[in-house]
Image: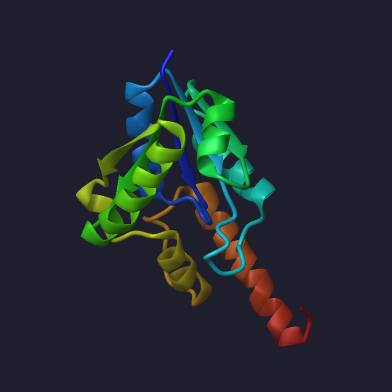
Length: 169
């Protein structure tokens, strides 16, 4: 049984993420969506449990998906879970430059190969950070994220706006 690991911060999960995960699920018997708090990114919008629950909801139609979170080295988590491969989505050449180095290091440390899937052209511009930025300022991201995620973004930024207006935190 071939197992793939799809890691990411998924803060929030976008239609681009869903595309890569759905396509991965066609080729592997088991897909583990691994949620991490990326220390190189800003403070998360959604905590780990919220992200895990959102992913569980929007990927519920895929029977071979598991959602888990981890900290530490990806390859250690991959080994612990019995992953045969790591799958990463690529939007642009700049993604490839970074991901290639990481894939080579992961292979060196663990022997686990990384497979790259190019993002569908429809989603190639999309990133979680752009979605957060647009949503924060009231822009329409409804076509970029699943409906449930769109609703949660509206709630989160509405709550933050109310707190700012009333002097709360």
